[in-house]
Image 1 (cartoon, one colour):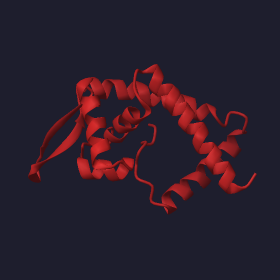
Image 2: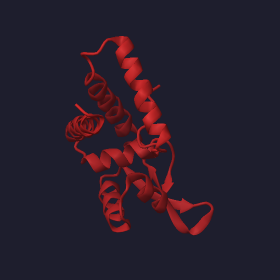
Image 3: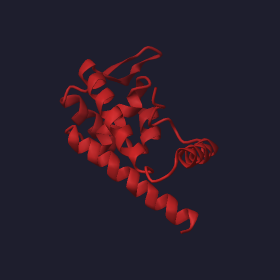
Length: 143
């Protein structure tokens, strides 16, 4: 299997695990991604759009729907009175902790057929690809 084929098929595998976790927590995969991004800190709408790869209208709808469930809130940007930042609510923070842990368990189970050294080597190589390509922090490192 070529590297292109392997990476594309691996992304489908990870996306399926993410979607499974999302369904288990009553979220859409996009809502799960939004909550995971916000674990690190509140973000402005422009930053969130860049990190999530969403157009402004799509992001606004996602934030609106997630806010309606009480998981995120809009708060004033301390550096720009005209702008808002999106932050987790207490309910959203509690939910994302559980969602994140469940998603990590599902994704970590994917390479279960590899030995521990093979898993470490895979993690090192993928980390290098991610860092070399300056992928935004959309999923934090597990403690």
